[in-house]
Length: 397
Image (tube, rainbow, N blue to C red; front, side, top):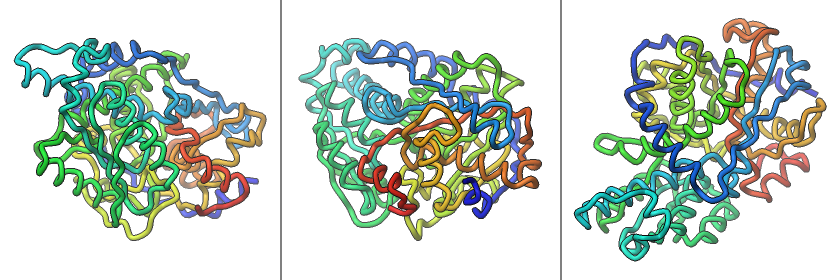
């Protein structure tokens, strides 16, 4: 049943992380605490489950696998609900403060005290689906107009989910990085405000707030775990998720923080190439990966500052092992609780299984029967049509 994971070619770069203070400087404890205080006060907040996959752990030969399942998060289907909506609040807080000449509390934005004023502040972003859905949800709650840019390969199901939350969705030709560029250009031209999960020179506050919001997920996992994991396998993308989790784990566990392994599609490996070059490096997306949320060619500078100091290993995986991992989780093949996950959610698990099928790679990653691995299941079923096709046996969608 696991033979497909043996056939997959896994790329590996052993990083030489330069120890520093980025995990405390780029994202401070105060940043995480402020986001925790706000987000845990939202209606509908409950911690998402940390699912122990003990049957699979025994099958592949590790001590423990804990899978943080973000599918139930605020009914939006992904961890992005923590970032985009919180960052939107912070953008509104800063802009309202300037316009009104007074301190503005997040609590008052949340409770609708500034709804009329928010109606004059348009928030925009580019997305592969989940970040835009979170931003649209936040804008709907706070009363701000929302404009979302998506690229040609974003599924119509994900586009419609954003429209249902009141967003104006603009589909462009090109890839994710093209949609990021257009969102920036049109925001500048029209006086709109970009709420992005990636940073660039001169633009750091919203991406930092996005990553601070993700810290809620990491704190929940740490509070649920009895022991520190030995490894954490983290999806790549622009790097915001990985950097936030790595920083949160470092702040919580200190010297006992787990080994950080970054996992990307071989078709969109900007962090892998950054590790190879020792600096943030852009890559061209020649073909879209099945892992839509990870199809990013340009890393976030803020995120890379953290990952350069915290990540020990960078892996690339082929698309061929993604759909089988989705099915393995949902079908509960080894007696574990069934988990319905999206394509981007399973990157870390797919890489872990493939690594354990390769003794040489396992040794390089320090994986053995005593390893305790934390995985971030970043999304649930955010596109039912794609999930249905995968469950029927499709390996490309």
